[in-house]
Image (tube, rainbow, N blue to C red; front, side, top):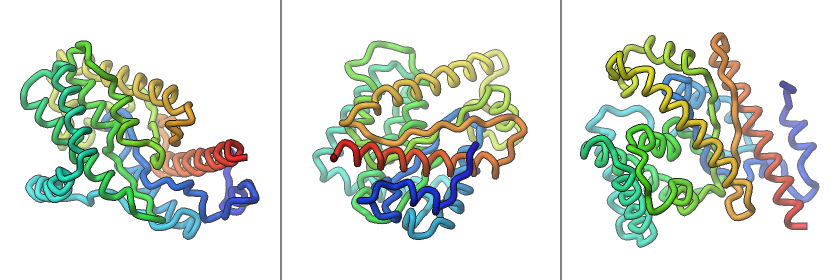
Length: 277
């Protein structure tokens, strides 16, 4: 992969764009991919890499620093509760609930869990979106929320597509990073963690391979749908893909992610400038 310095990137910007605007109004960088593929590690290393770029990207932070379960739920309630006054949020929540219920989840617990998780993520994005010159990095964002729905879905027909709900939330200020890796790579890394925080770790041996195959298909489908949908002028977000090989170090993956995000943002600048002209 060709390495680009900040000077290279700034020199490639259209004359009408200041180098510090390379963030292209991006407010969120969100990772998605198989459990264990390295999203959390990559998000922390990406944050450090972006911070070293200084004014080029503005302030950088990682969403919701680690909390225990009770502290996390209290924090979420504090984010979600005020949003109920907003009509747009209530409408999105109703659409999410309808989609989850119609998809045919495995249990009532799964229905409640994924609705609550996505409700928080939408509320969080809406509350953070008005800020300026700050990029928030999420290792577990909206796409991982929709992935959770697809993993437990009985694939029933729904009245609308998950992608339409995502576009209603808005992708114009988001950069999505797909960490792509083989099932064996993700599975081995996840099992080495041993914390049983993922449903993949708790799956019975007879369902383990089926669940991983389902997750892999869902990730690929999400990426394909997103790439096709974001190719329109109305939904101009940023999508980058980074391959994770078995022997790739976390630092190497993070450097690839940094290159991919910066170059994707630069390409978006060029696209927006050509449209404006």
